[in-house]
Image 1 (cartoon, rainbow, N blue to C red):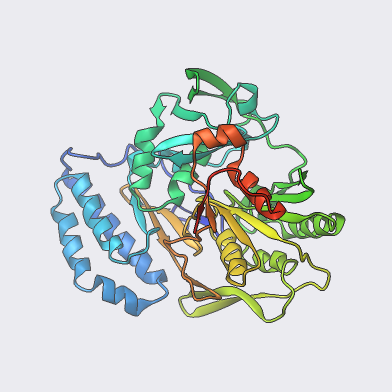
Image 2 (image 1 turned 180 degrees about the vertical axis):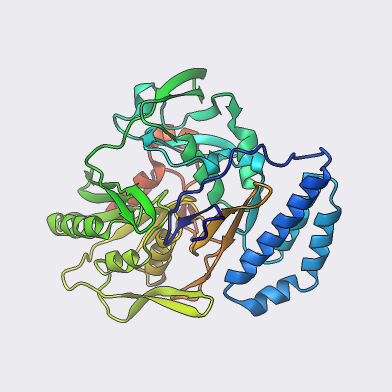
Length: 439
């Protein structure tokens, strides 16, 4: 890690802290650039191309995509009169790769992404529906529940910042995952501090003041190397119909997660099926997917896929357990499921072992960096390729569920958790339930 460069790698192997200076950054839209600002954009373009060229796993493909386009786009940046023109030229070069999580995020839209991790939680999870931030889950006893926020509500404003324009900016980066990261920051802050939210529900708008809570002591905090400790949440419940429900929020803490998963399987062998919830799970240690998958497959010689970095390949080999789980398995995924979550979901679906419910994943199965450019914009770039055992590349595409569940406030209010309910119906062989689109 270079000391003169600030970056965050939110998925797969690293969760390093992104730290950006408090500079005001570059003006956006139609405001004319000064000579100094033009130089910063040109410096940022050169930094962007050097970074990608130094890590891209297929130099021949990169040369094919960029060729003379690189010089053309650099000249456009050099001659740009506004920040918008300069960014359009940079995005044009990135778009030629046809990989959606190569993107540039303006400094004006990066505040939530650049916020340092905080230990306080709002006790709710947000997802985007038609450009709006919708509450899809409320943690029992959490801060959001205490102030009356309910599943299906829309979060309109945080403080004085309206979320719809910010969501549009985050989405314009070309990445499905970046809005999830930013919304997660909206739902966190320093423990004990307050944040004002404007909430829109079935009865209209209301303002609430929410006090962030520290994570429960029952959740272990696990660090690795330079990574700050991460709260690992492992939830186990028995649902109606005797269904084992397991939720994991990150693929870190193998010493904690692997025994938890094993004990749950051994303790509830009489359950009718399992629902494994990895929605919002950004990944972590990739090989943990192999360890967990070993409890769910019977045959040897199975791989979840292969990851190719510049000059190196990593095979995700699964070693089955003799006393593994043989009953039906449903996996819940959404646009917040990235990296290791995608590797596990796609790999197990490739052999027909699981059925997937929810929404298309982040399309970020690859190790990905988010780094600060000289002009204080953010650059996201992948640094490896991944191919599942069936030959599917998920980069920029994601894993599609077998049954697609929209973020629908009405369905959320009716069923609480439509994807969870639909998965339970499938395990029990029941018709009906929440609406879904069969893929």
